[in-house]
Amino acid sequence: MKKNHYVGRALLTLVAAFFAFAFLMPTVLTITNSFMTQSEISANYGKVFANAVGSANTYISDTVNLKFIPDKVSLSQYITVLIKSPDYLLKFWNSVILVVPIVLLQVGVASITAYSFTRWRGKFRSFLFFFYVILMLMPYQVTLVPNYLVSSWLGILNTRWAIIFPGMFAPFSVFLLTKFMRRIPVSLIEAAKLDGSSEWQIFKDICLPQCRSALYSIAILVFIDYWNMVEQPIVLLPDATKQPLSVYLSTINASEVGLAFAIATIYMVPCLLLFLHGEDYLVEGIAHQGSVKG
Image (cartoon, rainbow, N blue to C red):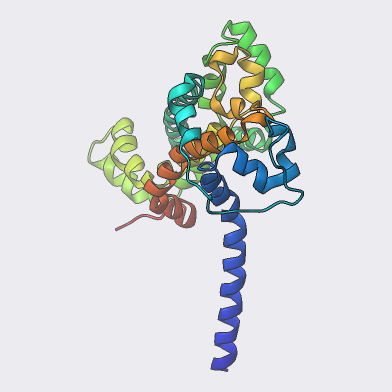
């Protein structure tokens, strides 16, 4: 029995390792290939990037050769992105200016709204919360036209507020935080009320500390979601100088494949740092769903 147990665990480990490698390989290839020269990329990936060849004399392989280690490490792509072409950094900071306010405002609005759903015992609470869930289930492509019309009516079309306003009122965070806050023991809130605490004090001193892991989880998920947005800026922010780097990445032509690898690597850094910083909170927030620590 023990032998079968060890064999089963070994097989599961191999399967998990295979899937881990499959999921990580694109990211690893992106990072390592960002240190390759354009000629090496053309030679390794052959006709996949045939249009990226800038000279007719450049060798193009007929087969694809996935390489994790460059023949010669080159920083030319990063020098171009960070020093020679300020457009890339401008787009990067456009992403920061758009996404950071969305995350902060959405978490703030969701916290207050979720607390209201938790404490309010009105007749229409369940109906209103169900309406929030329906909105959450709708893909954002469905709401693009209404957002466009409302932004045009408010006079904020082609401004950053056309992206920030719909983002700060997204129902996803409200749904998660409401489910989280409802798991806080009522006895804690009742004890605070007996001590003379106001609703604001209960919200600030009891609910928010208990929801710290959920707030971290939501902030990470919202940041990653809006950090990669493409359709919303194209429709609501047609001015190319204000669009984020996620839109600009999709417009890089075939002659700049090496730059695309370098830009994609830089673009991954904030998401990776945020995930690594809040990994424990993310796991706790998703796994425990608001369990209260003693």
